[in-house]
Structure formats: structure tokens, C-alpha cells
Length: 119
Image (cartoon, rainbow, N blue to C red):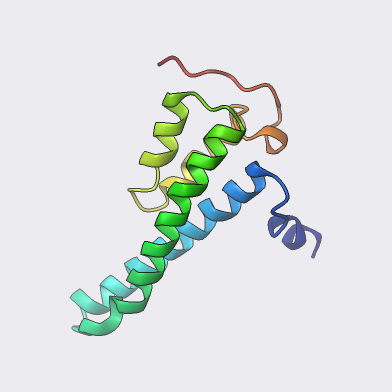
């Protein structure tokens, strides 16, 4: 239960970013499942709600990424990688893992000192 409460702890920019990154990936999964129902099984209406929810979460991810970039002083390269990560399915998870491993997510990273990516 402790891990679940930690996941919903949104007290820092890094924790908010992680939460929205995971949420964006979950909505991608829902949209992919809905697209299967639409294109393979012929249920045209299947993507209406998952598509709208994913679109909203996508916009929230972009905004949270920009806010986090300012608050954690990300370089333009890291910020661009965060924004691009929202395009492929589950890319936000890959970016979040990379950013955490490379010290770009403050207290979530093993090494709190950010390592700059060559621009």
C-alpha cells in the first residue's frame, strides 16, 4: 500500500511528471485497444472516449513537461526529448526511466545532480 501512496504523492515537480508520464502511457494503451476494436472488429465508436481522454492527457503531459523543464532547469535537449517522448506509444515511460537514471528528475534520481546532455 505504501508504494501506491507514493505513486499518488504529487508534492514535487518530478513526482508530478512521473504521474502524468505513466497516465499518458496508460491512455495510449487504452487507445490502442480501442483502435483494435474499431479497425479489426468494426466498432466505429470504440475510439471516441479513449481518444478524447488520451488527447486531454497528452496536452496535460506537454504542459507538465514544460513546467517541469523550467522548475528542474532541464536543457533544451532534455526538454525536447520529453516532448518527443509523448508521440510513440509508451515513449513517456521510456523517457521517465531515462531521465530518472540520468539525474534529470531530482529526488527520484539516484544521483540528484543532473547530467547535461550535449546539445
